Image 1 (cartoon, rainbow over the protein chains, first blue to last red):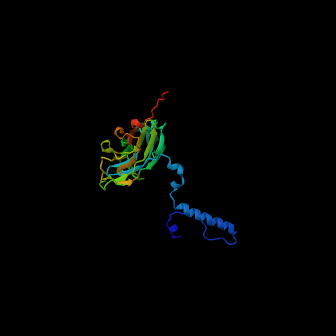
Image 2 (cartoon, each protein chain N blue to C red; image 1 turned 90 degrees about the horizontal axis):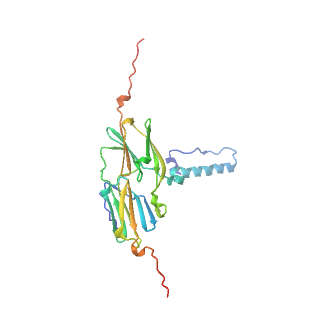
Length: 163
Length: 120
């Protein structure tokens, strides 16, 4: 199967059957290999249906000359329910998206919108000044703007002492 | 199906996630349209088909370099065929924090009413 060679990672498998190995073990090996081949081609989220029912906000990261901007789609959320924390160069956006209250007694025909707790962790690709970060929540979209840190600020010169 | 919505090829058309719920006196529709502008939401009913479109006001800033993307600035569009018992003239809509909420009340003729039994 040529397509198997296109998959970048593969689970360990024995191609060579060892001398004197019982044929049943060899058969099991062959079955394991078939399963690995089949599932390695699928997106892992497809295999965990529980994840699909959870609310996971979509995130965009973009940059320009001076700023790095992280935006997240959080429709129907209140800014009080959103928490943004920063450590090192990693931003964590978490919160709880609540369902509309008047829908409790209703009868659902379509239910595509998701709710619940979520956490997204984004590792920023450049050094930013988190002290001057600004977050705005508007029309269901959260936008966090981080000023990029001047690279020269981080460079520390070490004096060489002469003995 | 005739596609009533034309877009200017620059923006993608997205199908917004929607909840449709029957309540006592009508139907409620909640639609996620994050980023859509209030002035750019258009709800219309024609021949029992409710169509909703919404778009962003802000144009995509060209000077930005996209590093990671999971959503686009898109034009939201969706159509629903309404049941006969909805009074199309009484549909109301409001938008808050990127969620469009439509209230579609039942027309008066179909609201449950008690029929008096007369004794002979």
